[in-house]
Every structure is written in structure tokens, then in C-alpha cells.
Length: 232
Image 1 (cartoon, rainbow, N blue to C red):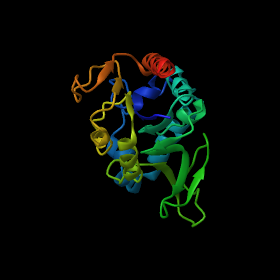
Image 2 (cartoon, rainbow, N blue to C red):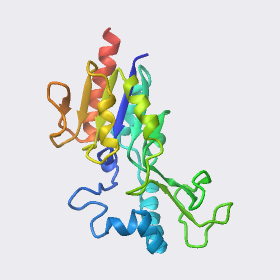
Image 3 (tube, rainbow, N blue to C red):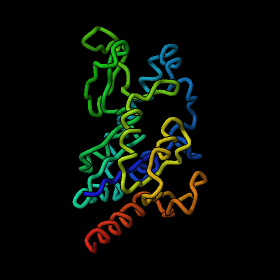
């Protein structure tokens, strides 16, 4: 089976009703990133951070996979598919994708604020001050905040060079270190980007741009790849 690597970002889940923080009416509007998504914000006011992520967790838990998420699961019928996502929701898994690597953590999980290896699945539940891990430390969201290391980055950098087809969906890839992942892809492979906005980072000779939302463009590309596979 050919290896397909898919990189997804906030635009992948936007059609499921989850706002992107870069849009004009996006998730972060009205919120100072430094106060709700940094280690400093956590130290200064953990209650505010927990409240912010409790709201995000509830929203993500209620969201449903869109046609883009579902289409990627069909790709597994003909290809070996690995999804590397910047998203912290679990919509890829809930759609049925079997191999998903989360770069920035998952909202449905929490961990000890002292021992990062103590991780717990909580689904859509809230956590509050006083909720502790087995080591007695306050629980915090299992997400990567701005200024923190991205633990799965090294693993992602090992996966991308294996790709025989590379697909980028719903991400501008301007936030590092994730933005550097496409640099690891082999030059000769087919590369596709699905985004309603024309990407500035890519050479048109290297990339085919499907100027569509994720829920529209992804099923089209998946169908095309499957048809091409069947005709080979």
C-alpha cells in the first residue's frame, strides 16, 4: 500500500463548528493568548485557564466529524494513511481514522501539572481547581501551550519523509515548529493542499491547490486518489 501522510489544522474542524483562532471572529477573539494559553498564564491565573479550556472541551465534545474527516477514513481502504494534526479535538478518531498523531495534545485528556506522564481521559468533562492527579498535583489541560515544547514533533518529522503522497488540509502552516514539517517531504512526491485561501508558502509547480473548504475539497481529492488507485 502507498503511504499517504495528511497534515491537518484548524480549517479541518471549522466545518464541524469549531472556530479557528486566526479568523476575524475566531476562538481567540476577546482572549489574550498570553493569559489562557501559556505557562505564564497558567501560573498567574489557573482558574481562568481551566474555565477557558473547559468551554473548549465541551464545544469539541459536542461537535461531530464533517465530510472531510469521514472522507479520510475511506482513504484507508486503498492506502496506508497517517494523519498528523495540529488540532486538539478528537474528530479524526471519532470519524474512524486509525492512525492519528496529535502535535498539540488533546482536549479530552488532562494531566498532572507536575508529571507530564500522568495523563487521564476525561471526555467532555470539566476540571476545576482542586482536581488532582495521582501524584497530588493539580490537573491541567493536556495541550501544548505557546512557549512549550512539542513532544511529538520528532515523531512527526520521521513520518513525513515516508510519505508517497502528502496532503495538507486547513492549515496555513505558519506556526512553528509544525510549519517546518513539509520541508521533510521528498521532492518528487505528489503534494496537495486543500484550503479556501491561496497559500503563500508553496510553489505552484510543487503543490496542487484545491481552493475549497476541508469538508468539500477532501472528499473530492479522496475520490480522485481512490479512482486513480483502482485504474493502476
